[in-house]
Length: 103
Image (cartoon, rainbow, N blue to C red; front, side, top):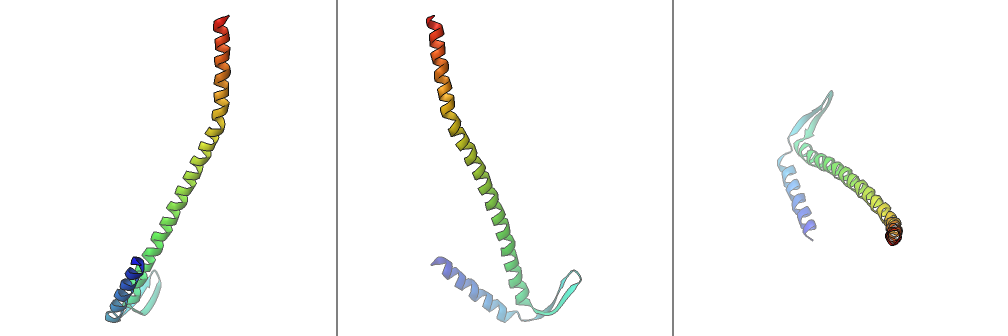
């Protein structure tokens, strides 16, 4: 519910900003020139471009974290498989040690 309310408020803010800033500007990116682009399109486009870039970084970090956790889970499962073998070997050594102490 809060996200819907914030989205509506954000949308109203963009709408108000768009009605107040209709001045055409020339947008230059390298050698490309787009003449007569409304100022609100430049501002809102910049916000959405920033959100897109932030989302890309978020996905990359989430993927990196997931791969790290997957690697740790594999190490833990390997350790869990090794533990019974080591416990069995310790028991054999204790029995051998006890037999050596008696003899």
